[in-house]
Image (cartoon, rainbow, N blue to C red; front, side, top):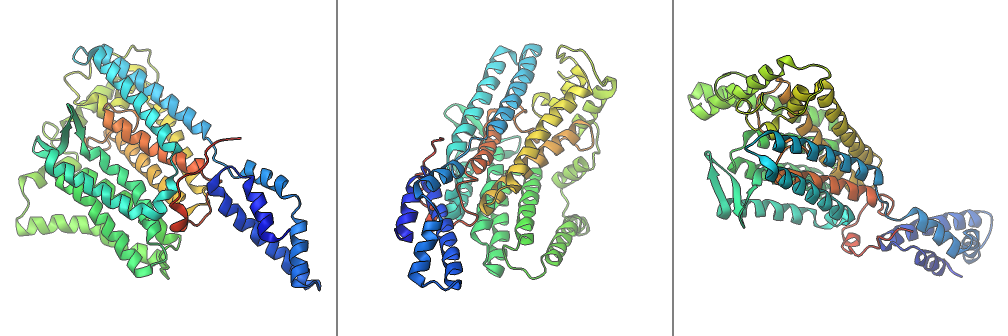
Length: 456
């Protein structure tokens, strides 16, 4: 039998269609290498090729062996961890609903329902093959930004001076939370422009500016700043890994980050010198500096006052008396502080450790991923979770002012839950196909999404 016939029989034993081309290329290279070695020993070209094929052994047995290796894997460990996080979240919001008469049992039902819906969404996203983004990353990213802008333009409702909500079918949906879904899409955008050198750098930075437009229109300075920061870190990772062929990447990044670091203070100084600082800018500066305890930053001082009597370990029943009427949005922004007051700092630390294990698992998946697209996408999700978790924890202990960032999987709100679980599902999809996809994805090769997902 000749080489191509051997490869065809072997790959027919592999049930995952996406893995067949990759395995076929690997086997073809092995046969060619062995044939070259035989030619060096004095064999003729045709004779060497046939001998190399015979050296590979039974194609059916080899194919079955490859089928066991190159198949989608279910990340049971991470799924179990996400289930535990969901149960903890449901238990916390049950305490909120039972302890606050204004929330009640209906609040508990809604939050448990949102957690369950988010978990099921995560499973569905996990099954989807993320590699279609290699060919359609920029189109998907453009469609995502365009959809946000259209909803903001035609369905947005002005609340407290900002248009961040849309009303659809009796539901109020926060558009601001959806912005973070652009982070994994930006990983696909970077993958699209790799190897394009100067053009790739320029286009990648322009995409960051485009992503900031929805946050700017929603008048969310903190969200805009955090989003741009995360995207710039992703861009920096791509530069360091040589995606754009920059000769001195570290020097380039040093200049870039130095300019960005000084641009903020320079802008504030320019506003002050030219007299353009308005009341809104003044309030934001005072908030970021932690000033004005009775004004824009009163929540920070209220939480610090509540935490004064907390202990390392406390036997509590979820008493909310210290929070109701004193700490705004305690069920969204100050869940760790509630745990510290009601059950001791150990309970809040346990929640932080649980979320930390999740982040560690995400980065472990990312950096053990041989596929560059999967690595960048899962890195983006991990950095997004890390930033939000750290900001929320620092906010709860008074190290940061009140900035209304949701704690992933924990803070109240259906959209927060859904978006968090979608990102987790993307990471699980990367893990699921880690043994199926090659390190380099060609645009034409990834348009076929009909992969066999059965497990032997």
